[in-house]
Length: 293
Image 1 (cartoon, rainbow, N blue to C red):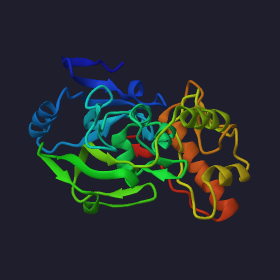
Image 2 (cartoon, rainbow, N blue to C red):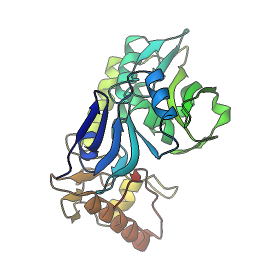
Image 3 (cartoon, one colour):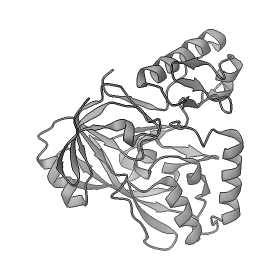
Image 4 (cartoon, rainbow, N blue to C red):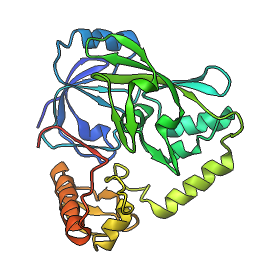
């Protein structure tokens, strides 16, 4: 058994990442760091000496392999998670804040349209990395400016024009991690409680929200939604090891309680092969696959 060695209240050695991912799989991180502040994070990066860094938010939309991640994993789930109003119709959102928290904040402060964020399972940092979206909107539609940090611990202030982004893809100008973003919303649209309730009910009807998943596994294709393509390939309910394709929504893979990362990755590859054979379409993963197998 891997021994977890505690260095300080916010830094751990050999921390099992299965405890920090929504799929509940993944091996250990060499170092697992929870920054308490920007200066704390900057000091850590300055002392890291260019060793590998992996950033982890809410642990959704990521598959960490069974042998874990070498180098350091920085977690923002319990820190850097504040949201505050700035000017009229805009707010500053830190990377560790959950997308659901942003949706609730928007409703409380009469900002919108932001109910769609309730359909994104991860953190704002993760949503920025992949331009996450739901219900017809995408994260970067509302980004006005960004605060980022580089490998040396230096903080930069950037604008959306410094990035190239498209459907579920963002190209960074240099190696960086998001600290916060300023989001600008409409002057004429607000987020309502009834809208949030409707979105929640819609997701409950169509997605396995009560089960251990990462969110959507594959990107939609121009020839059809990934879930529909997988279902038409006859894969709903297909199982490998301790995981299966959800019978509720075929673009979700469920950990039934005993899955390994290898089980899930094997099922992902099986789906890609079957969809290619059935539809002559190559499905791209939306989920990030990290670490050593």
